[in-house]
Amino acid sequence: MAVTGWIGSCLALLLALIFTAMPLPESMAIARPAMVPLVLSWLCLNTPHRFGVGWAFALGLVLDVTHSTSLGQHALALTLLIYLISKLRPTLMLLPAWQQSILLIPLWLGYQGLLLWLDGYVQQSIDPLWRWLPVISTSLCWLPLCALLTASDRPQQQSV
Image (cartoon, rainbow, N blue to C red; front, top):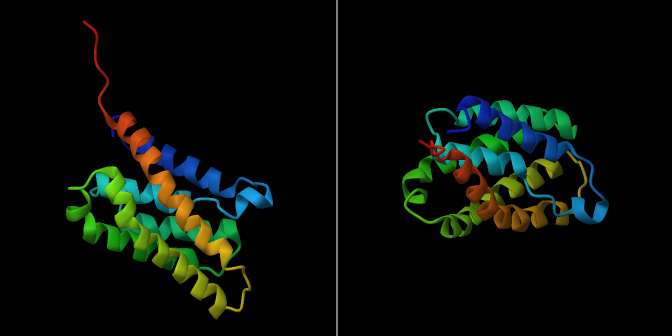
């Protein structure tokens, strides 16, 4: 990334964590996109040598702490998501961003479905709408996120 490499990537992840922890009104919170998986997926696709399953596990533990869920719940789901994205990377990188967003929908569904199943397993009641609406909003956020992060990834033109 041209945004000073590691610093820009970590800043994007930090902003995603802040957005995830930011309180929203109930009507908006129900459709909050999964920003950390979204940003980490983009980073895994575009900088696979820097971001992968290890980062997914660590950020998943941070999400577990911030959401006060069972320790390892988000870590497992995020690790599995990023593993699948890294396996699909050769195919995904051949596609434009709008086709990537369509191809990623089953992965977002799997991520949220695993979280829903783990919530049920530990007998933590949650409205299924809280798990399925973020799939739609996450998919809709893929295009703007790709445009924003790709624009920040391009080297700046030096004027002579």
